[in-house]
Image (cartoon, rainbow, N blue to C red; front, side):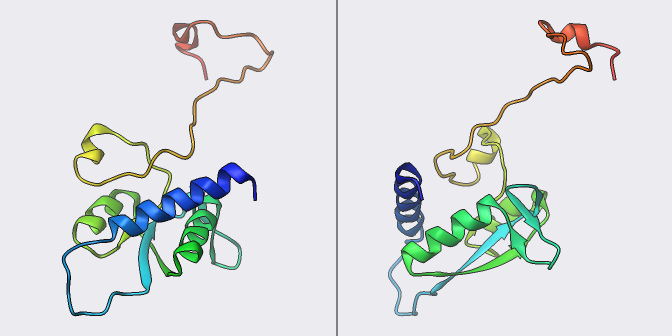
Length: 139
């Protein structure tokens, strides 16, 4: 594993464990994280041909759990249900391709972004698109 990825995983694991705190209790703490995902966003999270969760996010969280000495129980949740499931404590964490917005950040805490994406346009003949208005009416 590349050195920067090891540091990122370690930092996320530390933040995740620190964020799992709460009030002191005599009740034993669970050694299993219930993690929600919406397994429809290849290559980040998806169900493979053997019906197992797979993808970058799943591998990332598995590594975080391994470093933290925790087990993971995944729950495939509709995308719109991930934040409500966190709010009602049906899951302890969520890992799924999700853009951080102000509205979402008011409801849940996000990790530091670990993937930056963007959009691109492919043209049939390789013509550069200098202005999005040039795409009006195109298919």
